[in-house]
Image 1 (tube, rainbow, N blue to C red):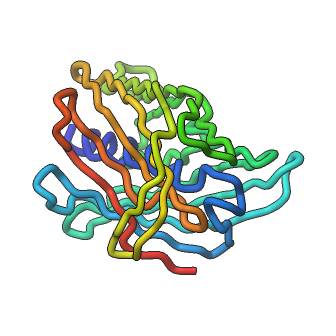
Image 2 (image 1 turned 30 degrees about the vertical axis):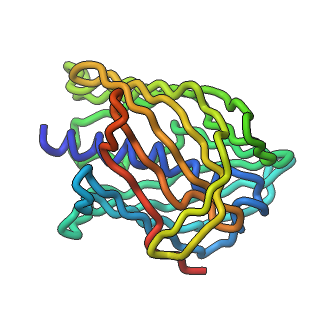
Length: 231
């Protein structure tokens, strides 16, 4: 169960980080093969909990747009590798689409009898973001169990009320960035229901530089910031 909970935490983190690349494929992020980004997550007491490193490993024309492949590695607070995965995204007409179902099964703890099933929607980010814009909702279901046996995990996450709230300057260990602020509500069903208010800050030429999650009372539960960028 401990491994499953670690997987769940890293999976939700990956779900959030897909928006890092979700802008017009030359404006809000300079897609460049070999570019590496590191982001660090912190708990409510500002203690580091998880580090995510990812790299653009492929970038090529496809289906009237461009297709990107990203390699992800997630580490715990002690630097131990939790998971490795790959994801695929596509940019068409300035809008970016990423399908959560493209996550490699390597994100799961290894077990010869373990099976993971992922279903859900594409996350869509328009290339031209304006304050007041409402963005499309998304949802995901992750089901884990043994071949021919019982289900041991069934998680649902719904992302709603996505809106471009403002433009703000955000300072991080990797530098200071002018960002578009996008807010949304995430409702998770796993061992009970949990609703979170979330915000992400996206900068041109960089992508996601910060994200935050708040409980229903407005108390910040965790946040993530970019800590290193290598071109």
